[in-house]
Length: 123
Image 1 (cartoon, rainbow, N blue to C red):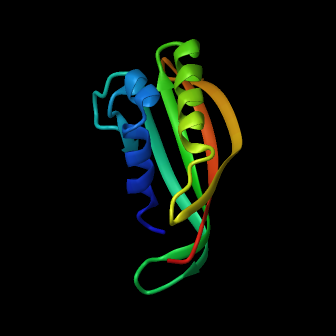
Image 2 (spheres, rainbow, N blue to C red; image 1 turned 90 degrees about the vertical axis):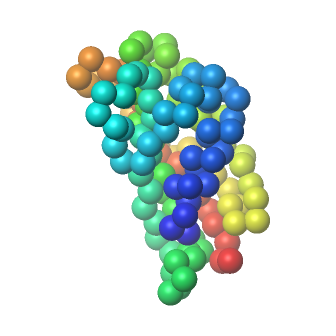
């Protein structure tokens, strides 16, 4: 499901807890230059059977990077994302699991890295 990025953006943007912490600062791959902290980046990859119309049944991995000014803020945002995604289901998304995580301090920002696996159905 190549459009999973749009779906993830919509889920997070419309989640009250997430939007209260970061607004709509959720970006694929890179943030616009000068974007103030906090913000979230995401990147997808998938394994599965695809078709010419771009539909995929299988596992989609979505990597998140939460950047924040403080450690506590980074944790709060990561927890809000986890609560918004884990357990989410619809006609295309069958299950979302948090698979992995890591934390770092990079370029004056606290980073929470999270990897979710999304099980999809053939559409």
